[in-house]
Amino acid sequence: MQSVDYIVVGGGSTGCVVASRLSETASCSVALLEAGPRDRNPYIHIPGAYYKTAQGPLLKRYAWEPRPEQQRPDGETMVQARVLGGGSSVNAMIYIRGNPADYDGWADAGAAGWAYEDVLPYFRRSENNNRFADAAHGTDGPLNVSDIDTIHPLTRAWLQACQQHGLPQNIDFNSGDQAGAGLYQITARGRRRSSAAVAYLHPALGRSNLQLHTGVQVARILIEDGRAIGVEYIQKGQRRILKARREVIISAGAIATPHLLMHSGIGPGEVLARYGIDVVRDLPGVGQNLQDHIEISLVYQLNGPHSYDQYKKPIWKAMAGLEYLAFGKGPATSNLIEGGAFWWGDKCEALPDCQFFLACGAGIEEGVDGVPGGNGCTINLGQVRPHSRGEVTLKSGDLADDPIIRPNYFGDPRDLEAVTDATLLAMDIMKRPTIARYIETRVVPDHPEPTRDAVRQFCQREAHAALHPCGTARMGRDAEAVVDPTLKVHGIDGLRVADASVMPNIISGNLNAVCMMIGEKAADLIRTT
Image (cartoon, rainbow, N blue to C red; front, side, top):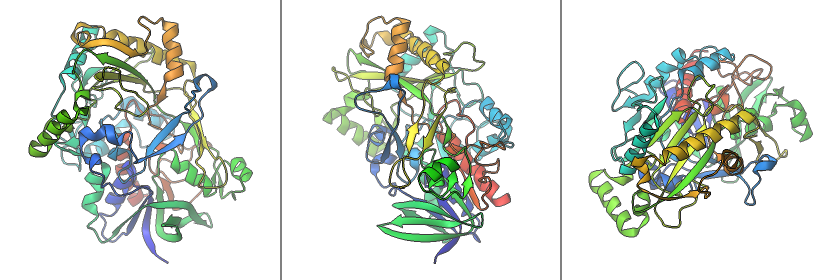
């Protein structure tokens, strides 16, 4: 029977980092198990092909249960990447760390050692920034973080409109001060996406002590006498066992991680017993504390070819492709979501609580339609620190059955009010002169001058998942915590969780950079604790 020192379950943003860093110690053997395929799809590596990866076959779709007032005829889905590199291989590449106060809040919630001053060195260690080199940014890490070389004129017009509304310009959302509008930096360099697989794993695969297995479904964690000793997995229809001499690290993401833990007998005892699963460790917090950013999309039809939608036409697409191949420049090097802002929905919040994105096109992201005229743009916005909490729980005792996901979006009424305010702000920005001259009409919502009540109802009805789930195996020392601050699962030796599920509270912005930071810190913790 095969064995290694460390088994890492999940080759996403965190798992790639953990496996790569652990394999730097030549005397340690590491196996990385990923359910999806290798990251060979060419669309993954072209920044401008984000519109393909955001809606394509590299995503695992989960149904989630909305609140009654959010029911839609076509149902609701939450997607998670299923490919090597995870979300970092398919996302919009936006590099955001959140606010320093987010991490100080983690420490206050029982995650000692995860305050901002503790995690900043790991952000810097990971980063190779092409513009900033200061106390907040690193230039020697494996992860390429860059300005976007090609900025669409519509993005610049929208950022000017934000300033006309009164938002200050912000040149660095990761400086510790998020307030204002500005250009995003992305995890790419030139013509190529810098995913966790590209940045961390690919350079490490030449090491003889690192194994990679893709197309692998881990069925359960093997536990003997209170210790994780390996995993049982399915590959090409065959059940196999891999033993871990030191530790098993679960990095499967905020949906799959609690699902796997529960099917391995670790979770709420009452739920496990209901489905005939032997209780190895009664941990009521597994699957609880689910958090996600809820998002609204405002779609506008433009009065001419003023967005990237024009590149959907064969001749323009061919020209962009030639420019990309010949010079590594042009629209294909853009992530299509170049500019954004952080501002207040709830004026009582000490820090900006809403994030805005301008997508220079319509129908780029899953669930957002195009426009009748063919040329459009989309304003996406969401609350970055929601108060609502949901859960991931079992549907049955069969691992093949997806879990039940109840995000409970807008379960706390403060969230709906903040998103309503942010939506009204976004609509007002689109009336400012520098952007209004490009607008033909607003398609979604289609009411010309909606009242606040109408906007609230629109938000409640049309809000969708921002696809940033986290918190379902949170850090802490209390009875509801799943892992301690060293990421060890309470009551089980040799088992850790390292992914977005360990976050006590969601951070103020996109999660990908944070997941890689968790991977960097996790590798140090595994080696030293």
